[in-house]
Image 1: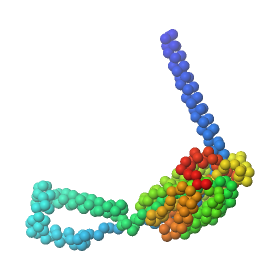
Image 2: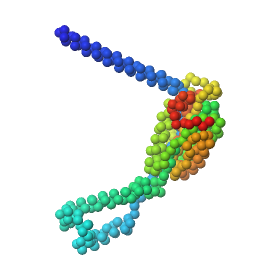
Image 3: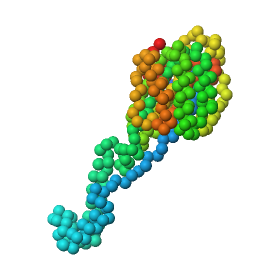
Length: 332
């Protein structure tokens, strides 16, 4: 009895020890999360507008190089088979391997192998130029997916108002509306060059069939920076929370003298190869914005405008900009 009692006591002690350790770890992790999240969430609201409206690629069947498939095959088969060896030794070899004489089973196997080889060579030929098999180069053109990002001093008080207006009034259901959104956004950013502090660009050239995937990847990356999308107009669905400042900070006028920022991001999908420079100075940033704003509605497949903070009174500190946007380079 004494031995059993000691075992029970030892088991309880081990359980309490493990439980205490896990509770302590959980408490520390929770404290760290909330202690780090509170300052960020105290000044993080975001806006978003845009969409992706690229046409669906049209599949085209490759033309036979020897006339129609039915005519060429029918003539060759009938003429050759009636002659006994019209296919030549090479074409009769599969029949001979599977018992010869044109048995139904042998014939089906031969057709399966021939079909596999034809499709394989057809796909290889169609993929030589980088296009998707079954798609012509004109139906699956090159598409540039690019990101232009700019950090401005929070002294640019009118920028938030301009971007709010553009997001609320833009038609995000048509290519013409998306082109208007892009142009108005670029104009709003170009109006405040004296407040430009940071900039960056990134992009890739892909095919139309992969363009939306690349576009969504850039968009999700930018959206992940926002604590809350307080204003959104995407694909015609407008959501406006009429948000006040998420934190207890003052207005932009109160903090204009401090080191606070607004970050705006443009993500673009455009037909062809778009030449957007890397950002080393304010001149490069101006060129990048103008290049993006000049894209026509016929060439524009998608655009997404994201900015933070969106609510009046919210700002980004210098530390938050450096932590969340390490790709930004100083241009001022």
